[in-house]
Length: 300
Length: 326
Image (cartoon, rainbow over all chains, first blue to last red; front, side, top):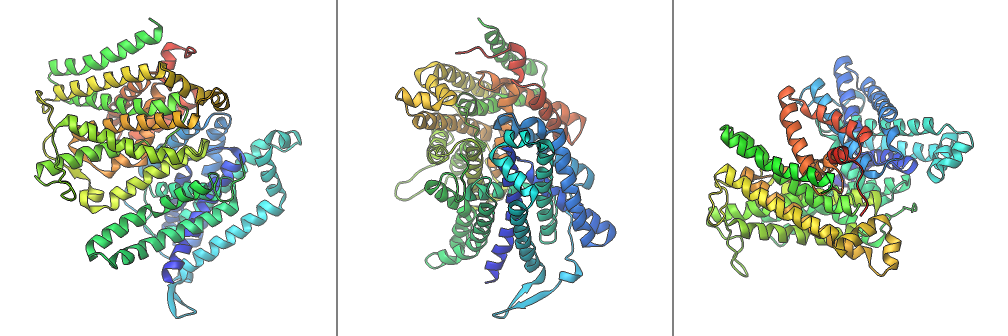
């Protein structure tokens, strides 16, 4: 049960990353490898401000602001020139951005990992129905993640901005002709995606250490998720995120136990661990065999 | 000879001359750098086949580079410890003979490229990029978590493997081996891209429907190219393992995939000698910028960004002008 909750927590965090990526790809057709760097920026901004001011909440606000600003800047300076280019140029340019962001962060913060403390309000554990003790902070992440998911659905489904985003996905020339400033829309969407990544980075800052390169494994998982969920679909990102989060966490926990049933302890542990680390990719391959465009992918 | 032909000749001779001059000047370190260039160029030549000629952006070629490396590392370390790799159902001994190791590395990466390619090629565009990346990560995590061959710490072996009749411990001899392999592979690629197969691959990139309508299935052409490409990159990985006498999961990491793409792009996509030029430039930059600042990757990133935004076509594109139509 505790592992299921951990899986959920990991899943919603991955969703925050994947939602930004999928929005950016859906609206602008851009593959952004540097999304992990925005996550890292969020985590570092949160850690830096929290250490300086002593308040986690100020840090959280700073992480949103820093990631959004970094996202908007990157969009205006670099990404804007890449929309018309092919994917290869986008891959390469955003790969270059990763090198720049990682080295710049290392320059500024040094290579020693930072640690964040859980805010007092959310410290301690709660007793869940069934008598399980679970850290309040992780529970808060799960709730925050679902709240953001609900907010995104409302934003995309029911607001004017959301209508424009969806219109931009289906026909960008048409909405430009209708008088929507498409350049500004793109900047807003990019900053929104960046802020989501920064938020995710800040939230995990208290669970794991904050260090350079922390964004890349998460970004690759986010790729797996949007491939599973279908590119451009927020619903797909949510389902995919939860699926991957649960599969990964439960796989790490259950597979070694499963192999221990008929193997000696040490080899069961190593076989289980290696298989668990590959599990989500096997899951992805399986989804692709059945649905090459992902579970909710409709874009052709 | 065309202008590009002359440039290619200069690149080939330049790469050959550099270590000879280095030996004459008693600067053995530069021989190692040149060997690294030759190996990276080989890895890039493999990728260029699918990325350049096939138009398929694989962000997972580190998988083949690393598998080739691990094939070499495992065979060599087992042979040096006098332990068979497998004792059941048949006994498989390790080996320190380079030709055998190369063959195994090529086979292993080809066998890995077959299912990866078959699954990834079901998709196209961005999906393809992400899926090749994901498969490479899968192998990366497997290497990290599988403890038998060093896991996260990697695997080192003490003596460089042997080639019959040659002293591979001599840096210049080892460079010569890598250089000759590079030249053979480039000649093979040149022949391949001008053959019926190469034209079909080019056709699949330009217009899939039209190719299908003349009776050639794009999937098979692409899959074959993907497998050949993986084999070449795997061979480069085996040489790289021998250069360092060390393999680690870092060879499989997605940074390596990114770097191999960078070799191809810096030099020029779909140019025969593009990867050679790109690898030369990359190693030179690493060496020069590394001297300027320990944060040389920052400068590299900046430079790369400028190349993508303003100087498309890479080094050879810059020197030789537009690619002539085949």
